[in-house]
Amino acid sequence: MSSLTRIVAVPALVGAVFALLAAAAPTLQAAEEAEAIQEAAAEIPENPIEATEESVRAGLRIYGRFCRSCHGVRGDGRGQNPSPGTRPANLIDDEWVHGDSDGEIYNVIRQGVPPAYDMDAWEGRVSDEEIWHVVNFLRELAARSQ
Ligand code: HEC
Image (cartoon, rainbow, N blue to C red; front, side, top):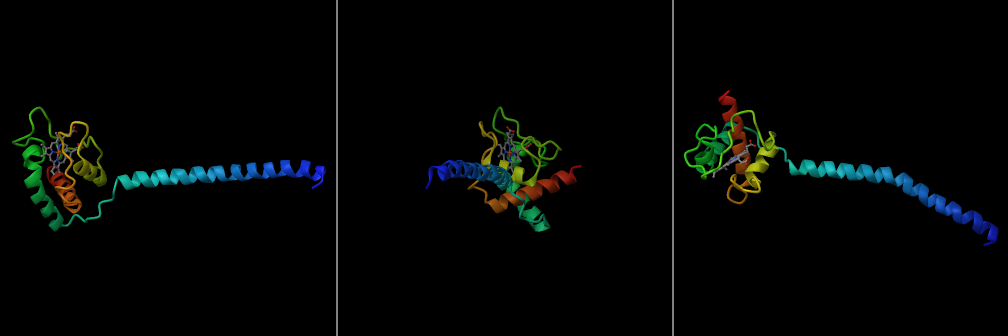
């Protein structure tokens, strides 16, 4: 390589690399954003179980067994046996402190409410499918109490 070619070629190469990086940057950023959106969506799942009568009835059974003592027969948060000093949520009003989508309600039931966990995590004790039945039941209960 003559010294003249080197003088021309090196900056051209450096320029080409920068051009490539500059072109790739927005694409990378878009990809990262898309990934972040996907992750957020993955954290709030879609309800995979249709709210059939059967599902609502299954939810009622699970609710009666595990939830009623704190959240009450009507779901108004006035159960017979809450842990002392805690206030079980009203599940039939319009207020959802931890999110009002099916997926968010599902997550609260499954993962509990940190840090105190007055609302316990039910993962492992109630199956994921059963939790969806409970979500469907809570929707029905809220609709009926309007
Ligand atoms: C030992 C009592 C207790 C039991 C049993 C219990 N919960 Fe809770 N739950 C609570 C308390 C207390 C809160 C309020 C937590 C907070 O927001 O700090 C709560 C909150 C919730 C919330 C969030 C409401 C909102 O506004 O976002 C949902 C949903 C819920 N419970 C559903 C259930 C379901 C379904 C069951 C049965 C599988 C259940 N809970 C069992 C005490 C209980």
